[in-house]
Length: 281
Image 1 (cartoon, rainbow, N blue to C red):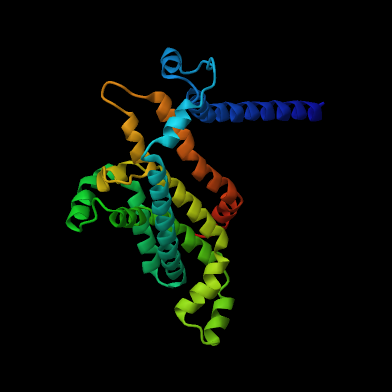
Image 2: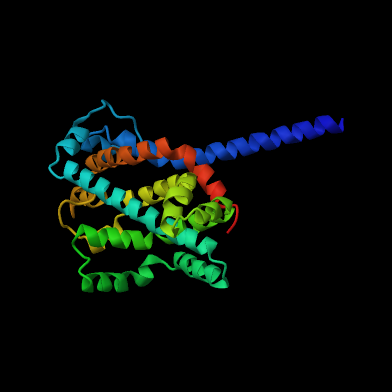
């Protein structure tokens, strides 16, 4: 009797959890559904209703986006910014994280705490100071300045992940390599860094997702110089008296495809890397 009651209670709990999961899934996918649906509508259909099914699916919005003079230069420029930013972030944060993990000092934890504390400060607090410094260093209006600022802003979490991952790695191989005459850099790039592949994939995905869709920093630092990043190029479809929402939706869909494909290809490494990097901290 008690066993049957427990089973029914457990089944009811599972059904409730399943219903909650589906509810959250619907909440997350509803905006995606609306964006994709409206990207196939004409402007007049979209103005009537944003959630109704289109009378006829049209590809004119996608044709307009793809034939827009600024789209492909913006796409290539965004890929360039993301690739260089992600590469530099991985290089610097892996070295810093490994060094902090192997530095047997209380200062190591203090420095890591300082890095992580920057995450609790809203960007708007230091936004003006950042732009003033960037202007004084001639970082505004050029890709190099934008990349360096992206690398600096995106550094705390990757350093934390690499440091935590390095803590979980055995130091015996490193000691053997040092005895064989490896220098510090040789030891890191030939032995340690290849072993960090799971967390490197995680950092690459997280950083690429952020840099690909970032708008505010690019707008403040890079401005309206051409070629623009994909998020910056989208602003041309917003007007004071006329917003071309059908083109905005189609632009969102097209610009999201490359980063979604990258995420799908790398997703098997993400959970593995985060789980391994969270072993110690």
